[in-house]
Image (cartoon, rainbow, N blue to C red; front, top):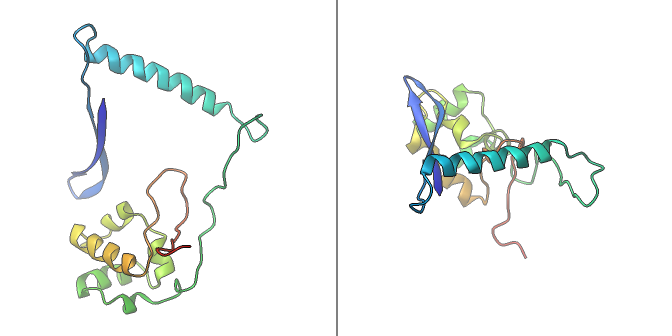
Amino acid sequence: MTYRVEATRAGERTDFDKLVVDVETKASIVPRDAVASAGGTLVELFGLARELNVEAEGIEIGPRFEEVVTGEGLDIRIEELDLTVRSFNCLKREGINTLAQLVNLTEHQLMNIRNFGQKSVDEVLEKLVERNLKLKDGVPGADSAYFYEANEE
């Protein structure tokens, strides 16, 4: 079984995702039954995860991504990124003035900015990579931006 998540659009809204699941099975089981069985297993596992708490023996719960990471260079104004006029104006109109504010967004959030399309997102990503930065991951529970060191020793 393989899956992928694709961005999809409904009218003017671009904040939807479509899940595409490809299922290959042996002749002895119907794909619908295989997916139903896997779904049942997932429900059972998620039920166990729901019952976890901090005191659960043998379980280490990592840090939550709640704080906005600040680092050297994140107080730089977006003017210094040398973005195209369109990208720059869209960000300014949304009140995004610094790198700290920019890296605190997900790619999905950028796509929801009026007149900010995939080319603008790609441009921003490229400019951030040049500074060893990236956008906040669009993973549920990851509530903060972060940066990484490309030449970390």
